[in-house]
Image 1 (cartoon, one colour):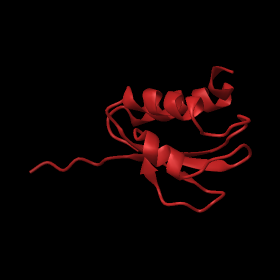
Image 2: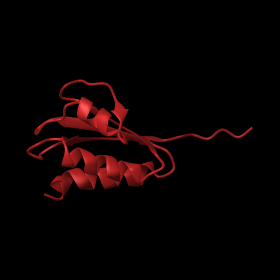
Image 3: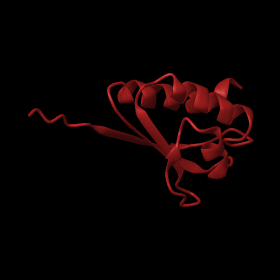
Image 4: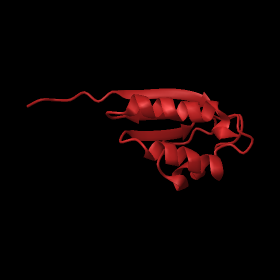
Length: 97
């Protein structure tokens, strides 16, 4: 029996968008996460929330990420590294605004 090791990747980012992860930025975040097979989770470090599914708009809205908050994103699975990279770019580019 072959056992596979699943690597868990993680990054911490600061949200600079004036509305945080609300409405349009949250929708863009979920759309980006949904492009990947990886299991992706996010939590609001600033508010010490539990992790939520990064592909769930209600989950994202529920952790109340505002401008200046820090979030932790975790990804595991075959394309986890690409998922982390894409979500980091989205946040670093201020959601295209």
